[in-house]
Image (tube, one colour):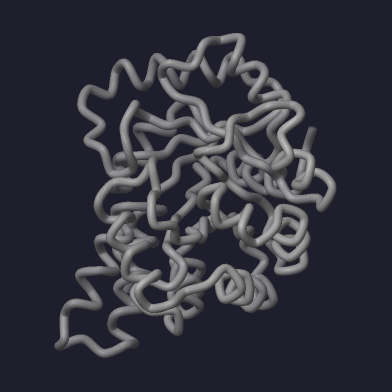
Amino acid sequence: MSSALANHILGVAASGEKALGVFVTSGFPTPAETLSILNAIDEGGADFIELGMPFSDPLAEGLPIQHSSKVALKAGITMKQTLETARKFTAGSKTPLVLMGYANPIVKYGLSNFFRDARSSGVQGVILPDVLPEQDSPFLLAARENGVDLINLIAPTTPEERIRFIDSISTGFVYAVSVTGVTGSDLGSKKPIQTYLKRAAEILGHNPLLVGFGIRSHADVVEMAEHTQGAIVGSALVAVIDALWEDGSLSSLDRLKGVKSFVHELKYGISHG
């Protein structure tokens, strides 16, 4: 089952590059600056962007993203604001935008309302780590009804039969969690991860495979994406944003240049001039 997002990722891979997905939390460091940060990530060369929907209990997130969610929620970020930011970004960019978050805020917003509004905001896909991938999932049905990819996750402990099933009901791509832990985890020995990713890539028949969690540099992207179409970086960028905005000597333009430069280095391995 192909989709525009899947075709985009496969197109990047066919050009000889690895697709780079970059995550940022909506409303962090302030709701007013999210759009500018998205544009800086886009200019840096990201092939698609994940916009995090802040939640008070993000089970799969490490400390940097937990912190960013707390800051955003304290600033009063709402789902409506996040979707409006998505709309403004996609109106000016062809780079695919994916939302990542948790079930509770979506249920509160209303399942049908959320996927309808996500689609009208130009969102191509949604990643929900705490929603089990099942054929009759109301999340999956609502996503399909509104033409939004529901991107599911696999882990090193996921059995082969389960990987096949997840591939069969997913669209956009399958998200391979590199380690059994939270975002930003230390990758440790990469050999077992490579074995797992090679096995998963051989099993998948419907979707591109991307790897995330613990990827911090261009070298990590290249190494971890050996058997996948690309990689996703989140916690490392969130930490960079935190440091840039904590530095009172920097102007808003300098901070955005810092974001752009970091993303460019993730993608190409050289700093952006």
